[in-house]
Image: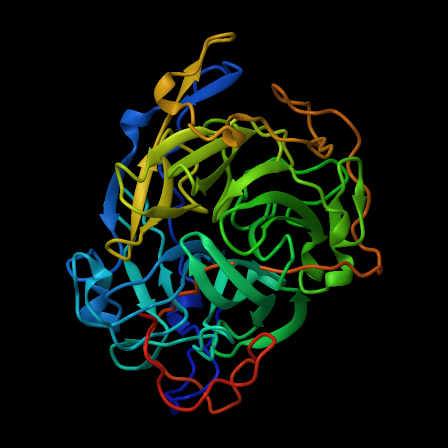
Length: 480
């Protein structure tokens, strides 16, 4: 399928992902597959392998986004595939001036969210070159989902994760949180969260009507779709077809809540009545019944299948101890191993939001993006695991200071793969269907998408913001 390039159109319109984001262009997926060592039963993070590969945004970065798109600072950078191209979504975004200590100076041109496109290279070893960013004029990345930018009312609207569904995986879905106010570091209040969608390659965005309340356990999310475009080689649950189900990992707004788990049919992602929540025993309707799967504090997170280690990998920030950690599991539902430290905010000051890439997961390097609030940049990072002999203790360098992070997951729904069970896999029956009509309750967290190309979109009403009126006319100043 080829998505059409829209004609040049006036400003102040629905958010758009240009043809640059969605044109179907073939690419080589990942590095050459390598044979992993014989399964040792467990793995340890190799801290010495954790390193920055390249800055992706800002002056002097490989994408020179300040000069090309008016983006000197932004954060997040979660990724999902749209056809053969990769979308990378960002949060609050600012223009000039460039600054090493970014917020030591005032910045103009505040956009709550932007999105970039990437033609995946054969290897990310030199970084991730942007094909383009959605723009509202030449050299200016466009805000996709408007916000009022009024602290205490609606300070910003930030997409927390994206995923493509529908025919040929070209329906784009962005789950976002509407932030009432950022209060203290790591803690913020929401007005609610929801999902916007695009069926024309990102040219226009529509409010799906999906809503979660301000106090939801799913204010911020990460998506996993076994066998789908972001994890095509992953094991699929028995009795399901590849890509038919989406697991939704949820945390409340901020970085101090527990991690809960939901699942929904991929073709009903925006239907809140179709969600089923893990209650510690089975899947049930109603978010109020969800129980913790991983004890908090859990910050912005991501989960991906790694074919080299034959494990699902979860990464997130433990905010109170400044540790970016990693857990592994043999199924996307867990049980998850105790967390291990990948890096800390001593090594990368004010680091957060580790997002695993949806490609290049077939070799020993684990690739992820990570933000730093000091520089307000997103960088591509990498790390590795090393086999751990049965009964051997973890190296002290990877044992978290956080007591909750040292715990294995609290509970794990059954997940039986269609083929023979691999090492450590569960063999219980697959979970029950997620397609009931009983309504659940719900809510959300962080950053916005980045976009390709420089064409503008058709005049139309912007997608509605959550729980608030339309944005005030004129430009609002960025937060102090």
